[in-house]
Length: 392
Image (cartoon, rainbow, N blue to C red; front, side, top):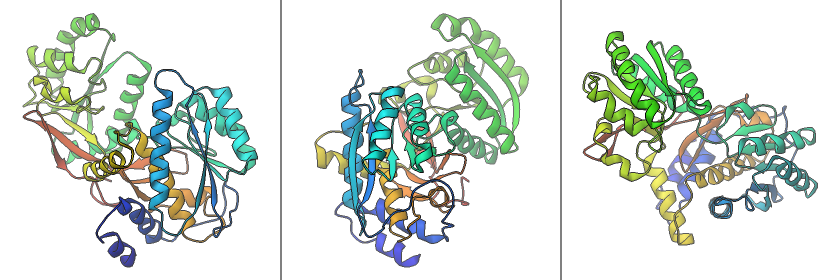
């Protein structure tokens, strides 16, 4: 273990640290291989990996697909002694096309599949190859499709909610009021927060919702503000994002008597996207979670230097998938891509920090807690470096 970690500290010409760290974490704990889906491989031969991307999907599918492929190929160049034969297939962002692409990929020899992006497409692709013993690592964060041979790599509401609720409770801000919009996504976010409150022995002060429109927010805020004040809550967890109702909530709630200094504002979404959101007066002092900023910045710099453009926001998931596959194949075991190997407890390190896949197909990711101060992002609790440490 320590030899691996020492090697990872050598001067970095390329972003090899993420790949080397992935190998070190995979080697830290014994890997209980054998059992569960995933065909057997020859570790001394190139591993056949299929990448399913929505190249023909409208609204930016080609750009997203190029970014995912670039990140995957970047990860391949960082692997030490592991050969990956990557073949790219167009899922079209549609379930039927994704299922056909997955079936064709396995017929071509794919031993594991990365992608697709969209939940329904990923579910269809996983079902199509479930009886072929091939696992699929989707770029989705929708946990409803997870399970069986389908794993989701995207950061989930549950990860973010647990990280923030745990931190809030440790800071004496564990009496939490939840405010959400009336939409499927925000209701899923609400449920993740409620689960995190229970899991972290925090206290639920109350829950309020509003119709997801500017008029709906405006009408609902006075009543929500009164309920928050009456509850005695010392933290307010909001599910809306900066592209939706959050800016209105952040302005209107203080105007109706909810003081951010007395009631800590917490966002389930990234409060720094877009960067212009950092200047919103109502969000000053708010908490949110984000991937390890140091690793993310290095990946973005390396990607830009290699390809002349910035990576898509989820491109790092493709890198992470290749890093995990490479770390497991490096063990030399023929069942390195089995379900039990993919879900080994020590996890991996990718460009977004530590992560591990769980037997139920979901994931856990180590995240930092940040605060907006003077229109800037300030990390107030660093991302954990291992599972079982602070933040987990």
